[in-house]
Image 1 (spheres, rainbow, N blue to C red):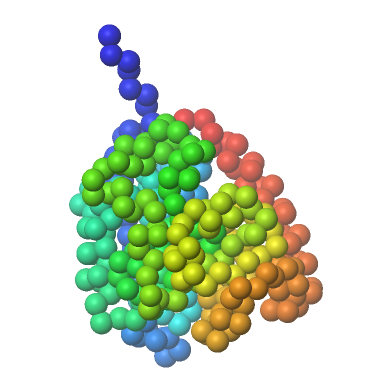
Image 2 (tube, rainbow, N blue to C red):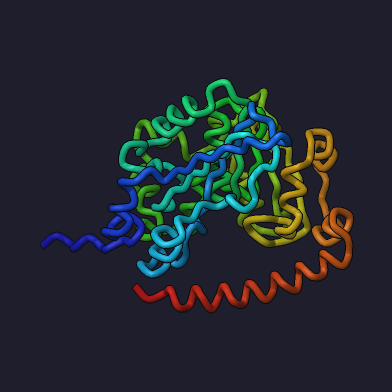
Length: 295
């Protein structure tokens, strides 16, 4: 008798399957006088788009809230904003919906949507992986990648086919396997700003998993923290996104203390207030996640 295939929420849930038939992208415009109408920012959501992998969590984030990361932290000067999410949480290897179900199809869609624009791509973790991948495919001007994965084969070493079924299914696919290692795509002519938590073993391992040539093309900015995701205080994110090229380049190849960095940007009092609020918010988030763990 054949072994029964396990139910994997991310790809088997009727709620996910139904949502996969929707667009899973959102396009908005900024018509204010302060924006650059020729600049388009593409934001890729991470695998934290919902958590844990339960129906309650999915309904809360995707169905009820229609969540896209970065909507509250968008690039302030961009005239066009494209928000993307992978609701199956597979690093966009399976695309974002039933029509745009491969990286190449998604890239073709984004090329059409950004034709004539200067383009920046933005993302953290899995979203940062996508920001680098699609930023390379689209030959964008600038990439912001915050602790992004760079080699999915390394990611798979600490995962299973139940957690990341599409990765394990496609890793040897003749067409898709090249997407797993960003060494195959990182190229000249793009400013890749790669923000890393230098005390995070996972993120350091990702950095060292790509080719030397690819590493040399990343403009790495290190922060003294082990936190995955954003390596700096989140309150600093709007300021970092507002930095011009000169300000960003001044941080490249430096190792920064995140508290001192924040104090220089927003002052001691605002930094302290944010840290206290962040601790409270983290506690409340854990409580909410606990209520969403049941299916």
